[in-house]
Image 1 (cartoon, rainbow, N blue to C red):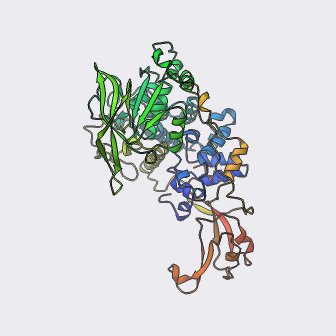
Image 2: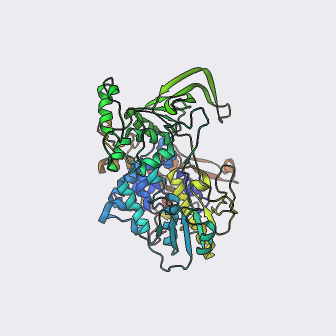
Image 3: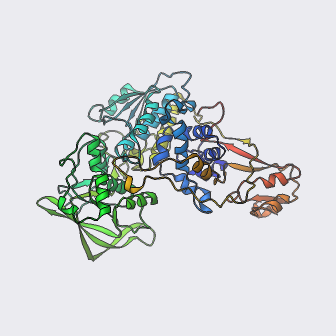
Length: 599
């Protein structure tokens, strides 16, 4: 359903989610002890619910109305709570297939998906459910894209990722690994063999920094560093690492550098050649640093240099706190001036002070204090200043390339070449995981419409249904603070072990009970209302008012207004209404499980 209806927009967590997950509905189900229903609601619009329960950027939490009172609901952690019980990682208890009913009729058309990352896999998932034959062409030797090759293992367990990918491939998706577009297969050949092609090739090229020394031995681009580490290749980084950048990728690179030797050990490499250290340095470190180094067994000093101040930093607050807990240091408001090189090898990074990062209009326009210079010693410098899409295989085709060096697409993600769609990083540049998943689903819908001639959306139409009365009769709804996400203590973060832990049932119920249930709406039957005003009298937050209709663009008469942005859904107005003109309903629109409708 595009664009979102008023009711969908009135559920801020749903409206903020690129795949339109009705987070409020599954959070409320957890509060009511209906964990399986919660999982099915979370899984319905998102084939990577289990992955997103660990690593989603959670734009729903940024939009959560509870955040206007104190702190937003821990929506991502609550999703993990139910996926651990019923997701692909739950083994025999898994219920993911309950919302993935196979198509009754298999279609004759074939679709090629180039790229086995989140966008490509999400598109393959939806296309198989619609009955199309799908083949994924992936350049590397594994599926998962940046979920596997970019997100560190300590944030996303690989066995869980494997299980979720297997559930998609198990729908009957054909996979050809080690197949690169432009080398092993051409766009022209795909057009001849398939009825449609979806390009989801990702942004796997790191951006360079044109400063003296940028081409020295020991300078890495962050995305390439992560790709090599996560593919099992040994990267010699030495003891001291400086990361340039202030985003989540910079922090991923910094925290991965601490664990470099753990990746070697996971690949069967150990010993002095796996991760060189300096014995002379160890003697001058304090006990905490020695303990941290012994457990994480990577670089012993990691410094993140950013143009931004701590408050301006684009990285998530949680990532920043975790990095600090692990001993990573930060140099804020410093800009890279040159990489110090001796005999072709990195020895340090010279930085210059930053006066300001943004101009008066809020645009990125850093200014520097050239007299404020510092040199930071380093064996390795990692550049985390952005990523780019590798479009070498596209050059010379009829595909339009945008000024941002991405593929030009329309609203349905169709490119300028008939029969070819593009999405994810290939069309929009580097974005969040959930955006890539949404693009895959949107492209699958566009392909389906084109091949089938079906102009109707594949998603169910919204409808309003009456909700069994919910009462929030306690006045302590705002007494409970957001639950702290359980983490392994820093001193116990050994190797590649996943750091974030799941919520206990008690924690989950308590956190879910904080939800304001924005998905439930107070409904008025105008024909029954007598404008007695008793609903306004009983509202504990004074959110209901009666005003002349002319004040809200109406004609003669009186209008009954409700401020739903602050409504706590206590239901007292419904109970007090003498003619039963008020009721509570839930909008079953996009992202909401409707009985009998799988998609």
